[in-house]
Image (cartoon, rainbow, N blue to C red; front, side, top):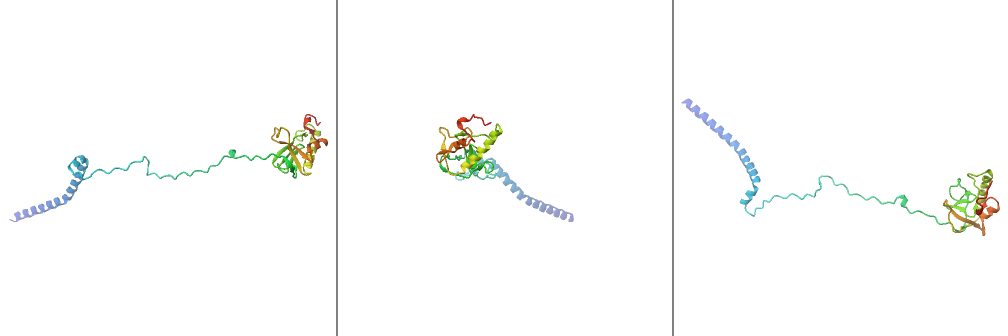
Length: 219
């Protein structure tokens, strides 16, 4: 009798254990069923739509239209236009006005000691108001590359004398007929004072030649 009761208790324990195990498995089975059903519906959506009412709109959400640009990359700042400047070669050149007229005056030195302004180069050339002027009616002896000591000596004498005459008072600059510049870009002018040419005064003093006597030797 005791053996029979023991067997009955063991059966009851096994039954209760089995029922507990089955009860613990039900949530997992239900979850698997839900997941499997969702997968099956997703794979057979076209068939499922046929069984649903037309009022149920199950259209998949449309993906936003792609612009073809990578929006994840940082957007660079807009280019700032650089200020436009003209190259130096395109800047308007300042062309000095031709020096023609009366009542010019200034204090003249020798070029090399005062820069290239109001200075005398030689017996027929000087700078005035930043422009180089050549006496058009004379030919002066050279101090550089002189052919002989006599030419160099007279060249220095003509240079000193021209400086003194320019410093003596107001003078007038007049055009040379049919030609305003020589081949070196110097303005050709006749320097006048009281109606007489300063160049011709230098000719009379024997320190320069007339322009028509360019070939006349100094040696």
